[in-house]
Length: 392
Image (cartoon, rainbow, N blue to C red; front, side, top):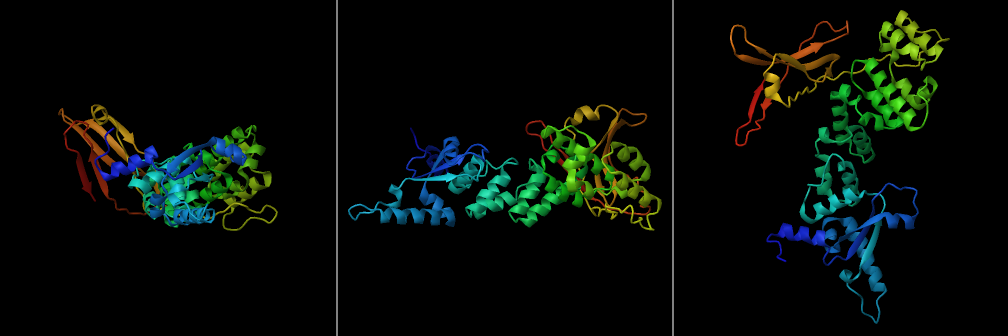
């Protein structure tokens, strides 16, 4: 069998074949946290590696294998100590996912980042920080936030790993795409603690939309815990998250029609909100204390709106309109409107893109804006050039 011609491929082959390996990692394949040590080893998959290469990339591995070598010397027979390469070590890894560990090894051996994805990037980041692989950690932190499988969980994990800048990028992306994200399945996967924080920091103007998202999350939690989706159960699973919703900001008619009949709020809570609606500047009587914030959410000062038309030629052949998902900026709902029609008296077809803005708030009367637009047309024909137009 012929050998690879270049160094990178030879190193990759060394990893994949395991030739000359002097350390083996048993990495758990599942999430069986309650399994005993012996059961964990049975469920683990063995990955082979070379101490010298690992030591060159990580001071953690260097310290780990130095300890092994010292033990081997202390256990020498006839005064002759085996070399570190003769000592076959086995390391059980219980806190790193196997896919993340493989991705880390690929980077250590050949700077290969092809295994990095939106599904595993946070697990790889944890592994990189654990073993002090700084180059890999930087690559993880440079991963595009829009490609994360679950930006909510990534935000939480980034904070746990004390990566404040990456956590802020995740939160900014959540704010910019809140209307879409709170309707996603990813939102249903967060726990109650993270739910409280997300509801506290959301920067969209529609409090009813936030309530609907919280209600959807609560119903899903009830189903997962084999509970009926009754008002008391919804209130129970929401817990403190219920008080992160700013019910006083919901217009009185919507509150009376959409919130009150669900009976999730207690009688005194409903009364306190209605009293606030009647006299917002005079305070609420002590007998009906208001437990929900009346502070208006801080809306984003800027945002990014995007639209992607997959089958452009089909859309352009007919008269029609297409709206992008909404993005809230300073309390205003912004969308991109694509409009296709035939020019009057001709057979020419026209395609226009417009910035669409609407608001339900009566408080926003005078405002101005500036924008930067980029239009890209990606050709599907082989050899054809793409077209990009940028304007202010």
